[in-house]
Length: 419
Image 1: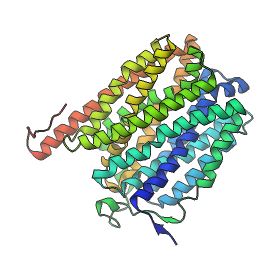
Image 2: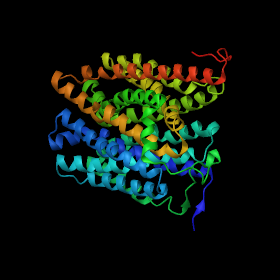
Image 3: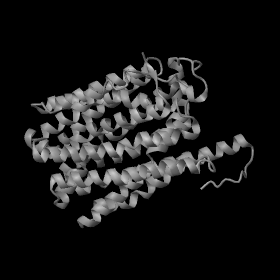
């Protein structure tokens, strides 16, 4: 018999599963150097392994978004966990570059189901006043899981081999895949008191998302942000090792510590501060996105310009902190910009776009530029430029949000500060 979970229990379970989601995703970055050596891969080919994951991830996201607004979300989530965990384990048994590409695509396929559906499920049990904080907690798994990927992958590779890193990272997910099976999933629209009344959307309803200007500004800003974040996360350990001479295991350990500390603090600070600020400013979420992303540009430039390892490490940590301030608000904005019966579709379309135009090819582009210039440090300078684009788009969203709020209120001077 299925037991109904409280909102806190739903959040706890989904956040724990999300941690393994990001752990499995980031294992490859921690062990990339020995993988490149074994299969004799160029930097561009190394980046292509991440592209394979992204292909499996973003290509199937619209399918899971469509199903997530119509079918049982619990069983779609369980299937996704099982598939991505199996793909991670199989990566450890790959005997060729082609096999690694295939298995990484399987990991992406499984994660697409979870990433498309879980945020909408959380939105159905938390009302508007608590939703951003709940999603902030859910996405805390991003820095923690990514950090564990760096640390676990680097340490297992250092003591055993890169193959063991994939096997031991993937096995727990296979056991966790059934953790939600005994529980009843919440009805769509429950937090808005629309449980049982949220109509199943038609295809034309889903396509109408593309006619929402706010949604476009959110997602295209997210595209630029993801372009930079994806390449940075993938090449971070290799950059510290090759440019600044830090050992592979120490580079992964340092990045893991930075992501878990700066990322954790940044995610909580950005999410909770934005929720408090929004009580006084309707554009608070988008302002946090724009300001924090632009604030990350200067330390990001320093990271790729300095020859001093201490300055590089300090500026890298500062960049990570500023970038993770956006984690909760950006996902809340995606979900709140569409009707309740289109949340999975909105998240899936966003996933599709940020990866197709963002990090699907950013790690490979950075690798190709590194090969062309024989300089990974110089290649990294494309990333701060992408952050500028993202920050500007999100500030444009803030201005539009504020103007819309004033129009609805019919009061040009509502007493709320715009910027």
